[in-house]
Every structure is written in C-alpha cells, then in structure tokens.
Image 1: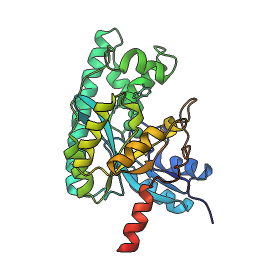
Image 2: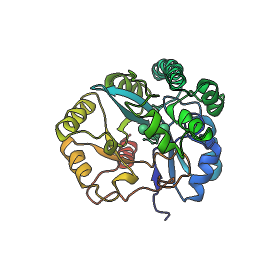
Image 3: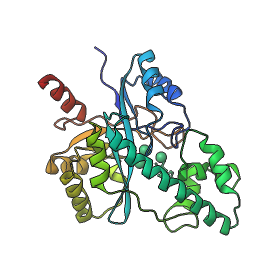
Length: 283
Ligand code: AMP
Ligand code: MN
Ligand code: MN
Ligand code: MN
C-alpha cells in the first residue's frame, strides 16, 4: 500500500505562489504527495483547475483556502479545508477581503513611492497577473526584480515587514467571521503555521482559546516544527485539537519547504484526515 504523504497548505498563481494550479499538482505528484490541498490567500479561483489536474495525476485533492484574520491587532491565518468553493457565505466573505486587499495594495504602493520607489502598483499588478489579487509577496518579487533586495525574504525584512516603509497596518476579518464562513462552506478550520506568530505563552493560550470557541478544529504542523514539535503537540492535546500538516509552499526556494516536505506526525497525535475518515465511516 502506498503510504500517506499529505500536504494541506500550498499556493498557486491565484494568490502569491509562482506555479499554476496544474504545475503545482505536477510538482506534488513528482514529490510523491498522495493528498494535496490548494489554499490560496482569500481566493478559491484556482480550485477547479487543481482538482482536474489532481484527477489526471491520480492524487487526492482537498479544496482549501487560507483566510487572513486579525486577532488582538495581529495578523494570523486560518486554513479552511474541504470547503465548497461555491458556498455563497464564503464567497461573500472572501470577496470582501479581496476588496480590502486591493485597497491595501494602493496604500503599500503609495508608501513605497514616498520612500523613493515609484510605480510599484503597476509592477506588482503585472506580477500578480489577471488571476490574483495583489499581496505583499508580489511587491517583494518586484523589489527583487528592481534590485532593491537580494531575495524576497530580504525584501520583506527591509520594506514589507511591520514597521518598515512599505508596511500598511491592515484590519482583516475576525476568527468568528473566518471560521463561520469556512463552516458554512462545509469545511474545517485549521490554525496555519502557529509557530510563526511569536506570541508569549499566555497570548498563545488566549488565541487558541478563541480559535476553539469559534469552532477551530486543528493546528498545523509544518517544516518549521521539524526540530521540536513537542510544544505544539502539548497545546493540541490541551485544547483537544487535531493536527493538520502543510508545507505552505509558494515557490521552489532555498530555505523553504518543498511540497510534501513535512515532519512526520508523532505517535499519539491525531491527524485531521483521520477525523475525516471517522466522519465518513460514521455517515
Ligand atoms: P499578505 O497576506 O499579502 O500580507 O502576505 C502574506 C504573505 O507574505 C505570506 O503568506 C508569505 O507568503 C509572505 N511573507 C510574509 N512574511 C514574510 C517574510 N518575512 N519573508 C518572506 N515571505 C513572507
Ligand atoms: Mn503567501
Ligand atoms: Mn500564511
Ligand atoms: Mn500560506
């Protein structure tokens, strides 16, 4: 039997990834991923193409989305898995976020212009293409292209991270809204990359408490937790969360996880996909 190699967090050209949904599935297939979720930022437009390519490649496909949330003044991300992309409630919610994303892009370009880097909106729009709404990742690529930074990581550090000249504090949506829309669309809410929020223990507890109260179901484990997954596992156990697993793949780049490049789920932890199997067999 082929062993399970899942990846429930990835991006395509429909948000800030560099591969089309078809190329993403092809890469997943080459990497021997057996089940992939496409989870573009606030956007579900790439799901039909990805689903068709996955059928062709013979790999399992989970329709997903990564929703931008503001919690206690910080940005956190909620991945919705197993969603119906046509659900009207989810569609309305995501449309609203994309509108606010577009307005933020104008502000980012204005601020970069004031810092002496003109015409960034046109450049970022070109890189985003027709399919995607502009994110900071597109500005980062533009800044690299123009020689302002050596790579996208450096562009974030110098221009786009909080406190830098191209950063715009933005109000996304609440946990209640994001998890509510995901639930309306029949999906399950996963807290994306919990290791990246740099919160003190008390704040992590407060965040997880609220995530749980609103129906959050799982915490995501990814490449960043390979060395020491234990604290996350303890939190999952304490709050009764299952685990999801995702690489958050955007592009092949040194120092970032490739598709399927995920630490093994330790014994005793419960995978979200096991919940689905249980739900399916109970139905
Ligand atoms: P946005 O939702 O447009 O604010 O962009 C968030 C995205 O920017 C994340 O999903 C990552 O793809 C990327 N990102 C955020 N911080 C960094 C960083 N420090 N280095 C590289 N990419 C980053
Ligand atoms: Mn991204
Ligand atoms: Mn994210
Ligand atoms: Mn992501």
